[in-house]
Amino acid sequence: MSTHTARLVWNRTTETMDPKTYARDHQWRFDSGVTVAASAAAGPAIPPGTVGADTVDPEEAVVAALAGCHMLFFLALAAKKGLTIDRYEDAPHGVLESKDGATWLTTITLAPQVTWGGAAPDAETVATLHREAHKRCYIANSLKSHVVIEGVALH
Image 1 (tube, rainbow, N blue to C red):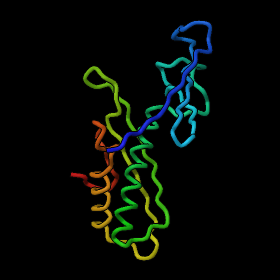
Image 2: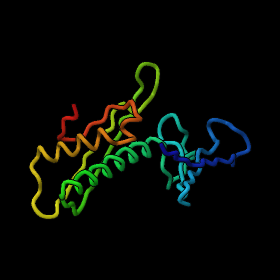
Image 3: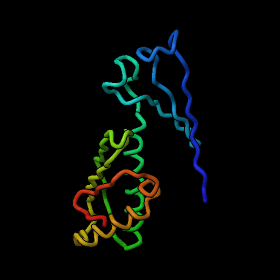
Image 4: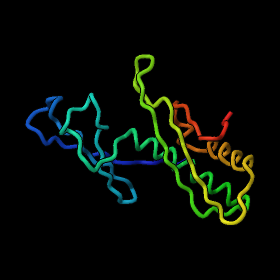
């Protein structure tokens, strides 16, 4: 077992807590010393001017965390098989929907592109690596979202 922590800090910067004007910007501080500027996702429910320009929102952070976790397991599994990867790139996206009275990330799609060093393994080996990475990924195991990996049947 391991414990993972972060610290969130938000300070009021407006005169009042008017829902139309209070700033949503805050910071995520990690044990490594990294601080990330965060805010709410811009959208119809969030008034213009209440969200910072260079910030990460919680929804995109979840999508990135899932993609990063999957990638790290994929790389580890490939390395254990003696496979060499020169580059791994992904363009994941999450769909935020209202269902059953709640709004949540209903589907997160990963779109990994792998550049192999040397001969690429066959498609079934790659799909098996993705399935195993998905099965082992801590973030995927923590979410109720449907996860899709383009071109790979997970079940």
